[in-house]
Length: 325
Image 1 (tube, rainbow, N blue to C red):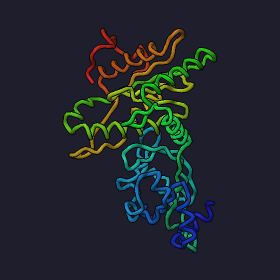
Image 2: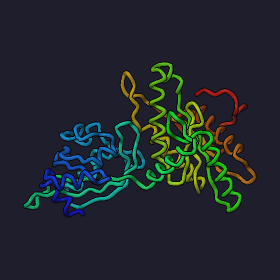
Image 3: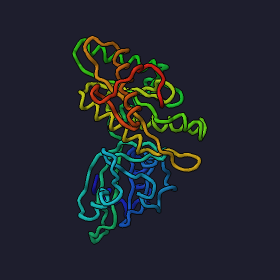
Image 4: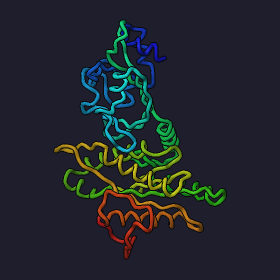
């Protein structure tokens, strides 16, 4: 496959090769030595949201894909896989997060290879990118939910009925097999001010971008639902306390790195997250209540943070009472 991909740049405008590349579900694009995009297939458009007309002639880092790694660090500068492939001629493969045109981050598997002219000189590079497995699993889950009336109509996430189903399933596994799970509750910081300042249409778009970010940011087997308003819940599969904290921090980072278009320019959006591991003898209400208490602690200690342990949260007099969102 790599051989014909390397050769494809010379003949991509030939009808057969163009048809072959456009029939691929994977995204394929070519860049020159300046990392200017010279070819963009249909698969790249489907995965990124950008059409061929929007990207050909532009550099990939010019406000387009803006790849980041798992920690949220930018890859479109000195750490760009395409740049290093053109420098040393070695193919590379990595798992990264790509910005979709709609603003959310999409996990993709990237394969970069050099492009050479007939003399063997490197004249550019090709990147092939595809959905990660967890994303495909999440999409299959959403398809199943649509037939079960368990979808929130605004965000396309699971609704409260779906959340209850996830909790029942995990509690059953915990009771029968001792498989531990966790719950995360994420709340958008100062969301009321977004609605009050920019209107509910902008607020709804923020909710949709965060919903897509959550869907793409979870592991295979994790479930996510909109609890109502600006609050979301994640019910994990098999997980430990440190992994739960890491997942919560990943979600917080992905939301902060996503793009939100406001009437006066990009909006800065963050979430606070509380989490709890299941304990012996607990029911769904109890584990949700503990996660909610820790969410309140995250709000009251500065927002845009994660609290998943009792040691890290401040005592609150009335966890179920009014909150400063």
